[in-house]
Length: 156
Image 1 (cartoon, rainbow, N blue to C red):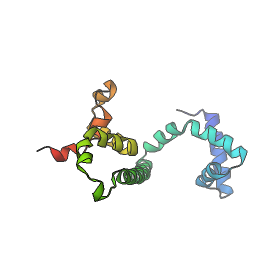
Image 2 (cartoon, one colour):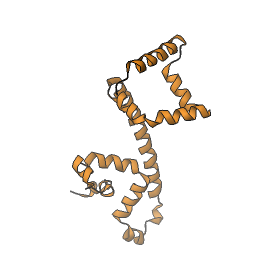
Image 3 (cartoon, rainbow, N blue to C red):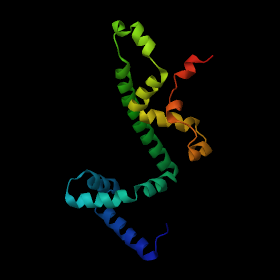
Image 4 (tube, rainbow, N blue to C red):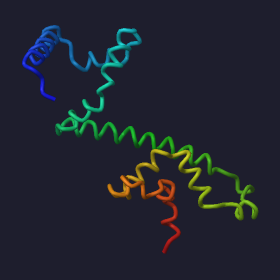
């Protein structure tokens, strides 16, 4: 998206003003994002409207791409860790609870249901790792089947 000369001049004027007042852009963003002031709420709506486009532009630059990747990877790993804590809790049981009836009733689809319910982010990551662009477009793979990662431990 190319700015008009007038828009460019206005932006440069704002940046020059910020520089003379020693106001960092990140401080402006932090204020808009963090302040409950109704004025900031309206700015947030306006700012977040085009957030994906802004992130795409940041991603086009090496430093921006690295920063976004590191931040998003940390966020995703934290999310997966939290999800896996839920999965572990769902499967925590006492030895006395492992009865012949439990073993007979246990099913792999039931296991998959627990994982998919408690770890949706992990399931999406696993699906992204095995799904081709064509399969994604045609929705050929079932995320729940793909998320059945333990099956790989049972096959030769």
